[in-house]
Length: 163
Image (tube, rainbow, N blue to C red):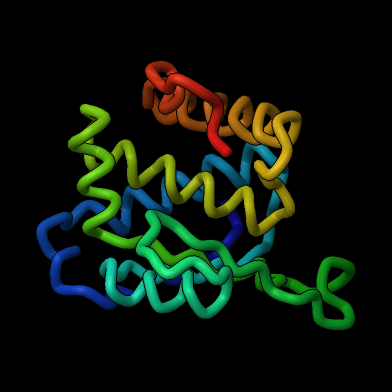
């Protein structure tokens, strides 16, 4: 893949997952290939619940921690046309929420991390899940990408679609 994925670790808890960076890069590369994205840059911050709660409150108005947030970059003049590596935006992932969800849903930590990285990437390129039809489209693409990585359908045991 010809994209750049910059990863910053902002929480010591991530040290317990030495394969996290490699997992994120593989997931984003798979998402980029599936969506035919080349020559892009994505920034990923691996953080903790406290930090993501502040971001979630500041940017979305929800005063609670969440698993992943995506912040698409505004397109600068020339980006997308001739820029060599357009910045797609930033993805922030919280360790504690990810770990809690993986345990509760009986998923491998790194598989759930892959799912959140793919989910965040898809948000950066314009996918959303506000409406049912959008959610179905986004989830189908997530399933396809994760299957290419050998990861089971993350929605298989869900009672209702992601929203």
